Length: 320
Image 1 (tube, rainbow, N blue to C red):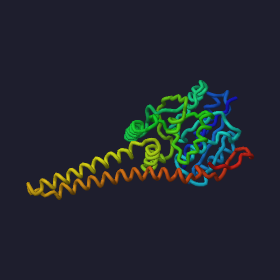
Image 2 (image 1 turned 90 degrees about the horizontal axis):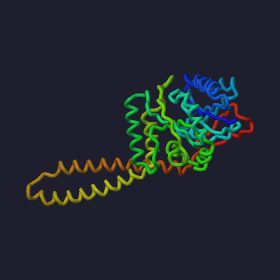
Image 3 (image 1 turned 60 degrees about the horizontal axis):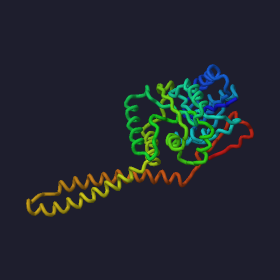
Image 4 (image 1 turned 180 degrees about the horizontal axis):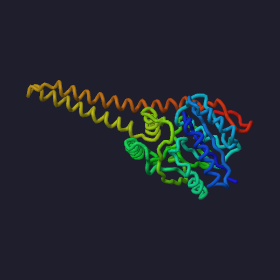
């Protein structure tokens, strides 16, 4: 009997963890009774009652297991770390990752499994529609178009990581050993057999979104600095172009000033400011690349575990 693991990363999701667990259990019992399963919560140091509620779920049902992180390791590291733990808790044949807030529909689990049984390595959910804020949807669409256009790897539009991953693909991810994982890009780069299923992203059921400008900016910069070479090349092109224009402007102004008694101060000042701002922008972009390189060179652990619940006693505590 195939065994399916459902990974749910959490951070301050006290209004959702019990309901999402019950919904997944009901879905397996009614729609996929021929499959064994377990639910794996990985909590990123919640400050509300999330951990308390997860403890209660684990106590009531051995099919619910949990990993508690020692601190908040960010929106990418925590779910990626849990994804790689496919051999704990008795092991599983595939892993489904999904959000705790019901924006990823539980009903998609059966569709993922049926597609997976056709032989696909990864079955990814694609947000063809969304009930989120229309402005956010518009900005995300622009971002996906930009990264797809500029990336050296063909990126997957409106893919958030909500997917079913076969163990064969998880083993590939383990070999990559990336301390700054970007699962959307890794799937696009290394998955040899990808299937996609479109769905409508629902509104969050309870609680507030953890996404803000900082987290969205982090996601955008991680993808750009990992999968595109065009930004630093644009810096080189613009730098050369404006250096040439500045030199030509200097010569022209030197010739015309004594002839026409031109006061070049204003024009030159604006040109200089424009060039300075362009330089500042591209220096910032280069800084993002350096930060990305620095994190990879330091190669810190993805996550430090604090505690595990409902896993076998011989499962040693590990960090990657």
